[in-house]
Length: 147
Length: 279
Image (cartoon, rainbow over all chains, first blue to last red; front, side, top):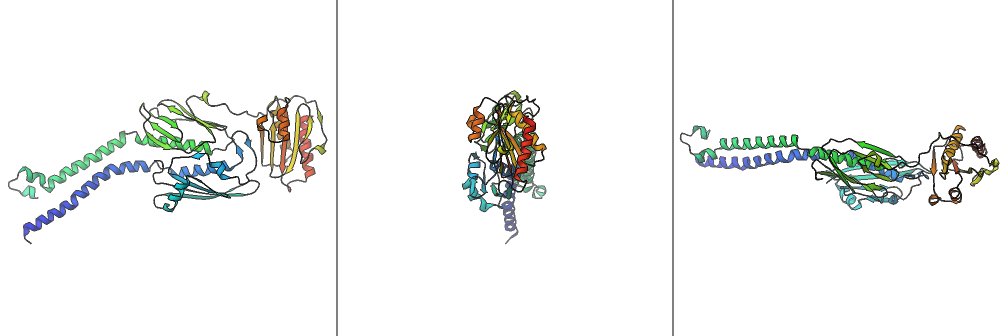
């Protein structure tokens, strides 16, 4: 191969890498700040903790209008949470004596992806009353769960 | 180097030379970086995002407050941020029209929810009163609290007949009448004292005085509550009786575990406590 041909190949190789890398850098400069901005407002930890408290609260015998009523005796959790709805990308499984869900389909689809960008929170609680009730709450949140 | 070493150049050579393209590309990259930084600094996107998330989580937190707790919360926000609250969604915005960043909250339809649009500069007050949760812009629009039981009210001198101690037991029986009307029941169960009142005249204050008196007898119950009820909320014969009379009436219901006290000792304590208040 002569000297000129070598230069042609060198130039071709140069442009082959140079153009895509430049494009990647420019796109990254536009996308990265936006994604950093979005990821900084993903309060899944806080949301999951609040949701746990809400569920436990809804299982307690306090009435918002009458106050304390009767003991926790493992009521039907489906009754307790059936009025809670959300378009948020998250799912919850509540296991007391029977299993109940918030966004059941989403939970079942997302739970295998826990760890792959999806965040899972699981906790077991003891609720005291006439007898001790154990409440297991499992939640899964999408990476951009508020959108 | 090719450009610098060229003895004779033309425009095409200049524009296709790697050095020129590198300079142009670096210029473009620099401008993009500068533009991105300027946009982040001047944009209110981040503010809108964080405020919508914050307010949505605050509403979620209101649902997580103990059900018998009433509260209102003055939410301080910058003057340029407004909020539009609709079922399940909060939008924080800076312009006149409510177009901005949204965040979801999980609404519980067991509660009565109040929504609205709160333009930038307007105050925002969140509240949870009974089964009402929502937001308003004026403190006077926060719903009234449920009846507050006051223990400071003066009780009149009662004229009635106190029944014997044998009336106190696992069956609800009248132990004082006719004004006020007092029923009592002591059963075995988890430690708690509940006093239902018909909310007439001094019935709530009487309930409070009885609760205090029983407490002073060093009967340890883990929770107690005084619950005003109406005929609609009556759930058994005794509560039906106390809600059907126009006289002040209370129903004292005490539960204690089997091992806590001998049942006769407990009956005597409760009887003494009520005797102190009623006679």
